[in-house]
Length: 114
Image 1 (cartoon, one colour):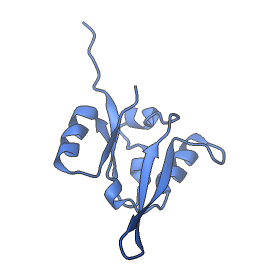
Image 2: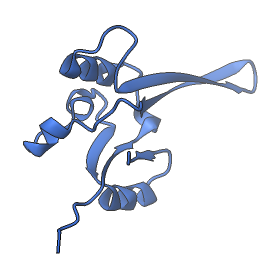
Image 3: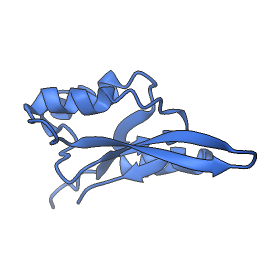
């Protein structure tokens, strides 16, 4: 019987993302992506608040080009985006473990490609 490997993904705690885009740059450098291409994006979110104020937030998210740095993780290394995230808001690992961490804290996103 063949051993089933656990499905991996990324857990992103967007509450503390600063919008530095280090994850975007790290991915582009890791894979030699050209301008405008890559496995990570950071979306700027502006939420209007009362009294003419606004909340500016950032949402890092993988694109369809993300391969979870399979070559790096096979060697026991972190994904490029996780390694270079200055706010330490990206975690890579088995989906089941990441889902437990997701349950413990809101304002996170679990991304797991097929």
